Length: 322
Picture (cartoon, rainbow, N blue to C red):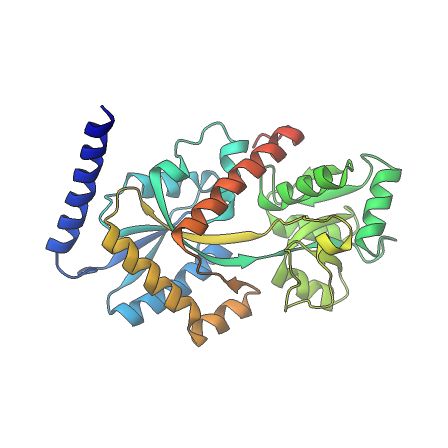
């Protein structure tokens, strides 16, 4: 049986390669990139930058199709059902590794239904407090939370959102109890932190920087393992008191499972080259993000690790999306 299964698998792979090689040079027609979020958001901006660069280097149109809704599930499910011919791709945010642990309605399996091609960018968050609050450092934050369990309040963009889970991870790793107030989006959450109605939150790097520079918010630390060039004076949460802490947002490129290997290889190489280009580097830096361009194996390993990490956090926090 094992030999028969192996033979079937090899036959399938051979057929995939033969089909890819028998078709006109890829891509011979426009390529659709599904983005499971609204136009103008972080994922959309990065996706359009990559699509423009790929179109320039390959000489074929790569166009964005926004399919927002249901925490990204609508667009992701559409991409999962698309033909696996390389003409439909998916660019999704790191919440794709969170939602399966917080929402029982997920109908896709990211590692079964897709092939990870490459992680595109990293985007750290910033631990923020109202500047009138006596907390001035991560250590102050931890001491305050430990002295008054459950009384230190933080805002997020909603239950199961990346900022929510990042704060729950902080609480879990630091051994503190902090109270969560979910909002319907980042903007109202940040407004209430600025207004002093809520003490803290994890915020997007670029929007946080503008508010920090204006004196409306105080940045305590960034959520990545290394400091950010955008806010170089801020320590990482890891170096400031919670060793090993990391909760970054990232965007990645995927293809439906079963896409031909030669097409996947070309998409990976072209994507890595696009991320290295000065134009892309400049556009990403303006958004406070960092190009990655790792291998499919590295990206797959990261996804597996994050699925496990966020599952543990969701269970510990008893988190279920509303």
